Figure 1: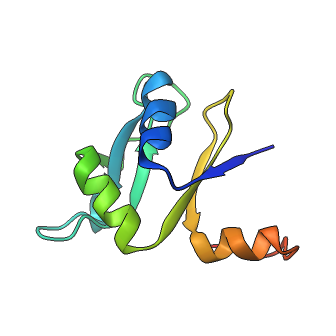
Figure 2: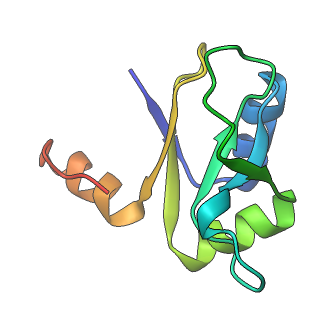
Length: 100
């Protein structure tokens, strides 16, 4: 079962403990615009990170807050998904089809 958090320290600690780094999707990462953010795991052979550009945690969290996002993650694995906080709220209220 996935956990959900918006806490910056928890996100960073979880990611770094698993070799994760803050990233942006390269095609959306333009001058002055961070673009779509992700957490990449460059040392994991199954991680599809070729299209990602490493960014700073400050850039990551500025975009995270600006877009009102949350992180779904597996405490024991590498699964993570960045979603809107409104999606988390809808799912907590029973709307299991909510996505974003």
